[in-house]
Amino acid sequence: MLGWAITFLIVALIAGVLGFGGVAGTAAWIAKVLFVVFIILFLVSLISGRRRRI
Image (tube, rainbow, N blue to C red; front, side):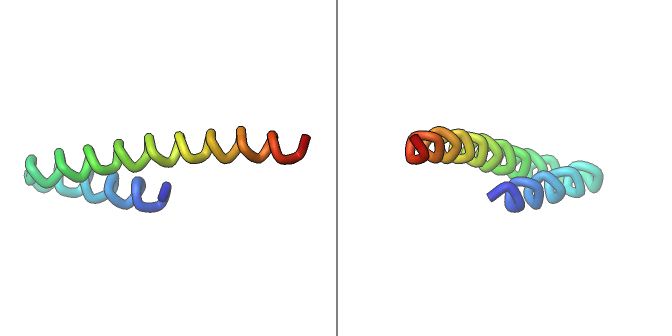
């Protein structure tokens, strides 16, 4: 999932440089959403992994 977030971030940067504002904004928004989802899932896996070991 982090790979997808980085991919959309790169697409947003390239589109922004080329002047495609709508595409850049959409790709940046998707990258932000995927990054937040990745962080949440990562934290949940850390917490649930610690509970199982105890």
